[in-house]
Each structure stands twice: as C-alpha cells, then as structure tokens.
Length: 162
Image 1 (spheres, helix red, strand yellow):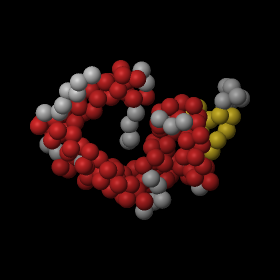
Image 2 (cartoon, rainbow, N blue to C red; image 1 turned 45 degrees about the horizontal axis):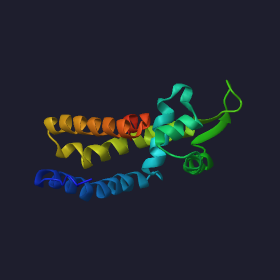
Image 3 (cartoon, rainbow, N blue to C red; image 1 turned 90 degrees about the vertical axis):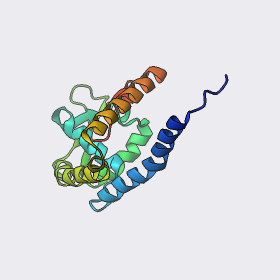
Image 4 (cartoon, one colour; image 1 turned 135 degrees about the vertical axis):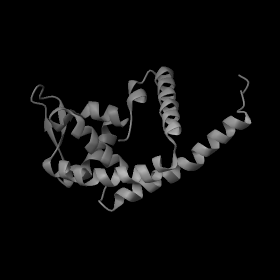
C-alpha cells in the first residue's frame, strides 16, 4: 500500500501533539506527586468513586483502565497497601473480585481532586479559547470513535482520565 503522506498542516498538528503530550502528562504527574499519587492511581480512585457503592468488578475496572488483569493487580497493590482501596469477593457472585474505594480513599480523592483540577486548568484550559475547547472535544471524540471502529474496543471510545 502506498503511503498517504501528511500534508504540511497535518504534519504541524501531529508534531504539536507528539511534542507536547509527554511534557503535559509529566507536568500533570508532578502536580499529583505531592499527595503521593500518579495519574493511574488517581484514575482508579475516580472510577471507583463514580461506581455504584464505590465498587467495581475487577475485570470491569481493568477494561475501563485498559489494563490486563495482572496490570490492574499491580496498579491496585499500592492503593490496597495504603488502605485507599480494598479487594473483596462480590456479594452477588463469590467468584468475582471487586475493587472497593475505602473511606480513606474517598478522603484522598476529595483532597486531591481540587489539586488535579487546578493542574488540568492551568496546564490546558487556561491556554484555550471557548472555541478551542469545543474543537478539542470534537477532535478527541472523533479519534475515540475511529479507534473503537478500528479495533472494536468499546473502552477506546469511553476511556478518560478525569
């Protein structure tokens, strides 16, 4: 198949993205480091806080985070050790393990959320116009839909870091 090369505008957009994303995520990580979290741990707390009864089936949480079961286990190990998350069998199906946000995890999230939101605002939204925010939403929704269509992965269309 012959390559359909990027034109100058597309190349400028692509380079802007790849030359910024690493720095952006590193800055967001640094801003969470003071509270002892990284973006992955923060995302776990957010998903669990949004779930019914602060609990999710481990397989569903792994899918939402786009992690393998062993990757999720490693991700949760530190949160379990610090008593921010527990694991327990499901009350509906004892074969299923649940990840559950603890009161300490809820408190950490409530303390951390304003720090993270301020970081996201300072690092991203303070630099954009209202029109650019709308464009950004449309851009990433279109990309997510394309990814989901390409690999039939529903998580690709719904994954996010809050």
